[in-house]
Length: 355
Image (cartoon, rainbow, N blue to C red; front, side, top):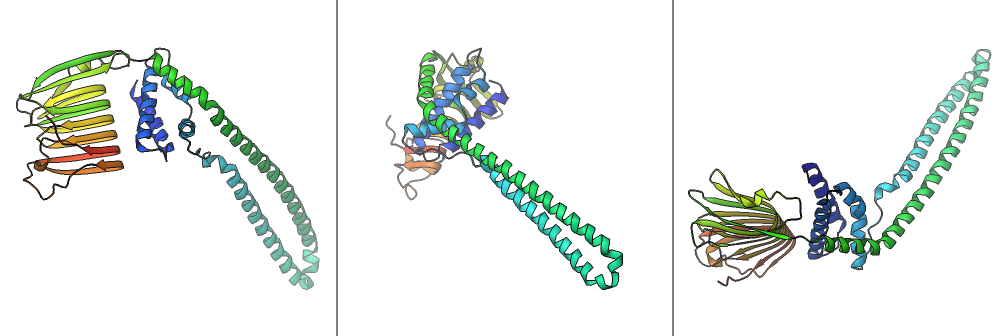
């Protein structure tokens, strides 16, 4: 999948997320992960394109309404942009009436001025008055005819739009059972085989370890040595570069850096490193760590289970979701470490560490 297709996929998923308003955070996350996984599996086939898969799924609003029906929620109304002919009709009538009134006022002013000076200029302007009155009648007749034609055109357009909206509702209602079966069958058909990548990296003089995972599950625990140890399980059927899993950890200045697309990974990190972890879709677990930690999850769950929470000065932020089970440690113990935990859509959970 190239960069342009990746942007198109992210735009489609963002529109789907906005269309799932009213669906619970966990259900919304499951739906987004299911659709993303389905699209990636389909596009892995040599004869399938991203455009073809999105066309099969339908618009984000249509797909969202299928899940709404499954959960007994009300359908979203048709896009408001489809009503533009009604506004055009009203605007056209207003413009025509304004022109008509201006012309009539002008003609009326001409007639009043002419009639005021008729005794003095009757011979000079007599023919001009007759000609002006004839033109006024011709203009009025033309505008009446134009108004009638415009009214009939817009009346037919409005009737066509109402019919189209009704057809759209019928398609959403009756296509859902078929589409659901299709999604489930493709999900079973393209189940992925798994590969494992593992290794160790010495930290030397580095002071920071940063890891970024796009899709999957990430668990980070303390290392008993001065080495970063990792083990990742990933799908061999998706269009990923296997070489990136053979050399997961790279060096960028004073930072050791790991960037992965998809998989389930366990990392063991020495405590002298500052940890920065970012996950887009999935679950992130920080277990038994005693070091500065900065973690961010876009869509999913973040579990914070430090070795001793009294040693941490921590902050939490969730845009859409919940923060669970955190004790108030603001007045207890000396604060050796800092933890910043952020989730955009999902949950942040605290649990006591059990070695």
